Image (cartoon, rainbow over all chains, first blue to last red; front, side, top):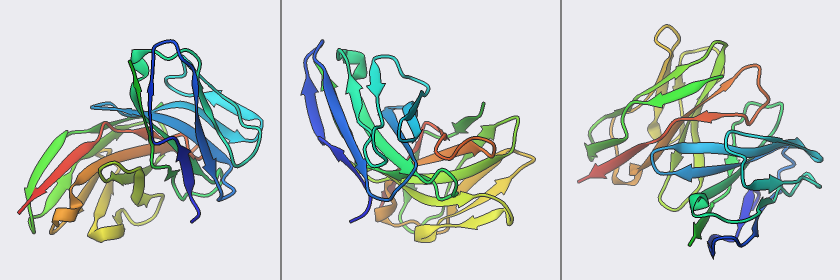
Length: 113
Length: 115
């Protein structure tokens, strides 16, 4: 089925470890983004990309890196995990020029201990 | 920059009763407006959107929303809820001049439907 695929669904990390959250979409969307969801705070934009090779920071970028080498993939890297990064992470994509709104992945629940 | 305020963090409602979820926004420029729904342990799904034209927008699952420019509001309504409407609902805005995808989300409203 077409959509946004995120892996893994669950992850537990120790403080200081690094990891990559994977995101792939098969809808040829130009725009991809990463959000984190925390209770009472809604979704906050971490990083986004308007096309292959182009990325930019969102509202809460510290501690995260991204790259976009292909249209389909947009991985999110945690460089040195901290307990404050415990959250649910969502990847989302959309066309850059059509007002269809986002298509979201099903999320990655990350716990940093 | 835009901001979104969802005025209720939780709304309890009985099955078959109506529900209204309130959303106010602030922006110095024109905006597009969206409502998303998140069922437990799932990602967000688009319920409806306002881009232009009629201020009353109908979405999926019997929901509708009304854009009120003078009050900068975009409240979501459903005349009769079902147990399956239990979910978290997010209002989102995007400036008409920003690239697609650069949304600002509200904090969410948890709807709990009981028999």
